Every structure is written in structure tokens, then in C-alpha cells.
Image: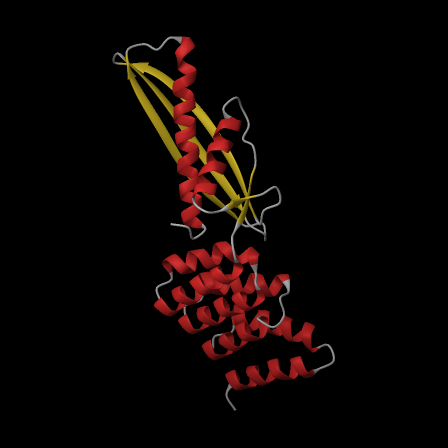
Amino acid sequence: MSRALVTLLGLSVALATPAGAESGGEAAVKALRTDSSLKVRTQAAIVLGQHGSPEGIAALREAVAGDSASSVRLAAVSALGRLQARGARLTLSSAAQADPDATVRAASVRALLALGPVTVTVEEAGGPSGPRLSAALAGQLRERGLVVAELGEVRAKPKVTLDVTESGGKTTFEARASLAVVDGDGRIDLLETSARATVSGAVPEARRGAYVQKVVEAAGRGLGDDLAVRLGRR
């Protein structure tokens, strides 16, 4: 009897025991993460689609992101869709956009559609220009069809730094913004963008605020566009 078949039988036996749901899930997590047989890993993903434990969802996300076999990635995507794992949205979005297998990409799109609209909490950035950056970010997300809510499944934490330089008879205003995107499992992605405005001559202090506002709002909109694409909204 092949080792792969023995492993598959072991998963089936674990599920049939009185503590089958728990022990089967643990065995499936281990098999999905470590077994060399793609058949075993595929079956393990299917098993985990019946459980919905945090560890199982984490293992499925790892498989979608990194398993070398398209059949395993497909099974993991299908399992996450079956579980309505909203915390896995970023993983599914990445697979929908970049997985090398068209079948996996299509399955990821279906799983995302089944999750419904994404909700995003936009935290207020610090500093004098922080509120304006956050407002521009939130507004752009709404324009892209995302729901901005107080308790969203994804948290967006923006930051902005400003530079004003005078050189060569010109004044340059630059906003460099970053966005930490935290999903339901605490995983973090980082997005960065910048916006710049250059004006001939020196700019009086009284007028500088308008240019600062312009570049900060542009940076916020840029972050909103990038995040919308990251979440599957082109």
C-alpha cells in the first residue's frame, strides 16, 4: 500500500473517531503543510473545508499562496470559499490576480464574489495632515465600491510625511504616504505612494497650506486606488 494511500486512510479514520472533527482537522493541517504527495495535500484541503478552525484557515491560505501544485491550490481556494473565510480575502485577491493557473484564478474570483462587499476601517493618520489623508483615502475607497465602516474586516492604517524644498527657483511640495493593511488574521501588507507639486518661485507661507493639501489628498487617493486593486476592485 502506498504511503499516500495510508495517509488518506489516516485522515478518514481520524474523521470517523468520536473526536474526529478535531483530530481530523489537526491531521489535515499537518498533511497540507508537510506531505509530499499532492493527492494527500489536495484531500487535506478538502477536509479542512469542512472544519473552519483558525489553524485550518491559516493552512489553507498558506497553500493558496505557496503550494507548487495547482490542484492543491484549487482545493484550498474552494475550501476557503466554502467556509466563507472573510479573513482570507487578501489571499484570494492575490490568487485571483496572479496565480499562474487560470482555473485557480477563476475559482478565486468566484470565492471573492461569494464573500460579498469588503468592509474597510480607515484609521486616522497622525500629524496635522493626517485627517486629510485619511479622508481622501476613505473617499477613494467608496468611489471604488468598497464599504468604509467602523468595524471592517480589513483595517487601513495610513501615515504621511511632508517635504517642502526650494531649489533652482522652484518650490516643491511632496507627500510620501504609506498604508499598513491588516486583515482578519492579523496579516499585514504595506502599500506606499507619493505625490508632488512643483511651483515656480518662492511660495509665501500663507499659500503653502493649499499646496500641502493638494499633494496630501493626491497621495490619499493613490493609496485608495492601490488598496482597491489589492482587494480585487480594478
